[in-house]
Image (cartoon, rainbow, N blue to C red; front, side):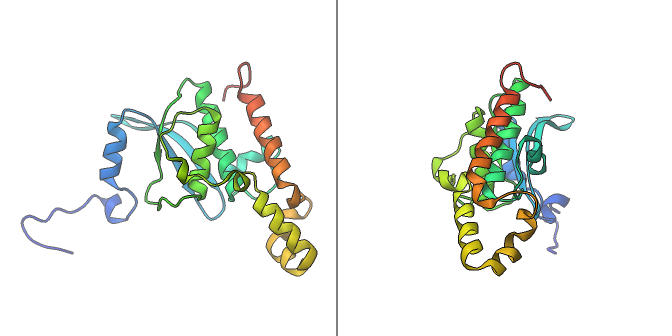
Length: 202
């Protein structure tokens, strides 16, 4: 660690590489809530957070594990699941009267076509106003899981042992992965039906 009379110890979360305070200051200064997207090794989490003097307040949130309530029976950490999680979080916050936000990806790298920007695309498609370049979003066929369905079909027909190793736990008793695009459509339709005018307010 550096020494000297002019050395200033960084904030703890900066030392731990958890918060970029320069980026956070710019986001808070925008006056808009933050669309916070975080991914783990098992799921995707999307929150809409408002910065207040007393601390951050979560207005609405969605966890990809909650997609099962709307008919999703596949994995919860892939691109389609990320999109639907963003769609669900935005649908919830729109019911509460918030219609705009800015993207907060934390310390993640801004990789085009990633799960993070899949979630952002889902939020935008739900009706939330979020500034973001279209170049960052995955292709429509990836959002719908067509690439996963095609890959699963090819493995199941030509390499069944590999299919069982990669998809056995997901497909066993839950779903036919080759039907993932139609499951995506159904899940999105169910979310829309619940959060349109007159639907549930959570």
